[in-house]
Length: 134
Image (cartoon, rainbow, N blue to C red):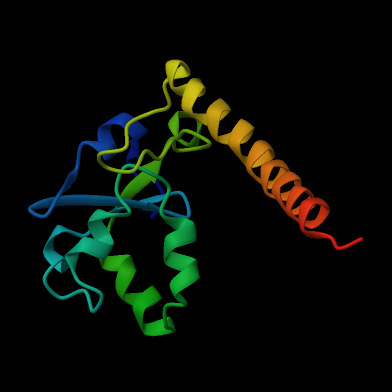
């Protein structure tokens, strides 16, 4: 592939559906739409790797040499690496981001973590002192 097309990250990340799925692996762009139904791990595995550099996801699985050869027919170009974010912010569904106003419950928990053991210790000492036989 002497002169392959170069894609921007924003353009690639728009292809994140079952009927239109592109992945970035080792700087190359793969259109895996036609492979979605045939992927041994299912289409959800591929969809979870969209919108980011999926190289680590791909390498962590330990794909066979046959799988690596099969990938070549899905290559459609290369990614402009200067447009790929270095880190992807993950926010779990339904959790949202952190809110600075939520610091009060965290502070209360820290105070209780300190006071409860002290209260238990004080109660134990009081019981020992008042129940001690002379």
